[in-house]
Image 1 (cartoon, rainbow, N blue to C red):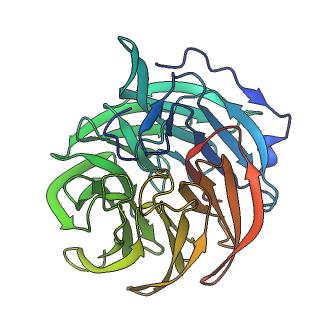
Image 2 (cartoon, rainbow, N blue to C red; image 1 turned 120 degrees about the vertical axis):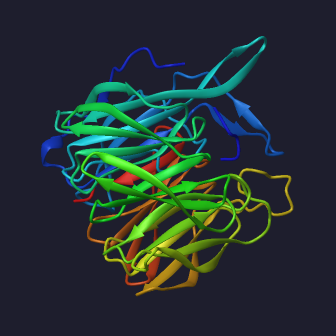
Length: 388
């Protein structure tokens, strides 16, 4: 969301529901933020920290998700809805703890935090394994295709943290200065490059990756206004960015998804696709034929002329390097994160204000709302799917 920044959680007690997690596949991880809502005029209403959660869901039947763990871990809606991820093996998850809330006189003040929570998904039930420090306001993050590296975009520090990953042994091994605020970073499928969204500079930076060495050679690609997060389309020829348009909020005007040609030398932006007002979430099917941009549509500001009770999904057909906006599908109140199942047949979207997930069937570029809503124990600020 719009705010540039938002107390560490003392305990890591977990509530488990007694399912056999080892057999569950795939997983969906959801971060619930209970610190921030909005009044009818879109003004932030801040609550004390201590009630956030990270929920792990078993999607053996995507139409009927099952909660296998509910971990009391702090996370935030302030930032892109990709502030957590699951490694390629489906055994480890990382969650960025980007925003703290503390008393400032008689009011509550949001400020950057600097932690990454490590979750052991092999445990039955899943549990917090460790917490490591990154930069200030860690936000969008991603694992490498091999799973032995992770990158974290630190918005307040204008840097990227490089983490080595060996099971649940996660260590900070390097910090890459980026010069501008970065909101998300994602690897290409070959693991040799990464793309970082330079949110306030309206660019996407290209990083080179060799082993555990990550290098920024100052190659930036111009995007639309405020690119929030980036997704690479399988098999890696192009990437898409969600260009939010108004620094994390709606404003009544249309915004875009930018198309990046990764096969070109050097890579470059080749198109902008109009998608609607306030794209925040972004997800690409593992099949590489369809994507969705998650549109806020002013759904957290009842007094605005552009207010809509529900946001929606802009459906994007992908045909080689050509990306087309082919339709829209309604979502819930202030939709944030979105994720396709590994087989590409289902799509799940988190509705922040409604505290639930919308479940959609996917057939090519036809995305159909099943009408099923899965209730969550909090406000879903972010979500990611396990790769398998």
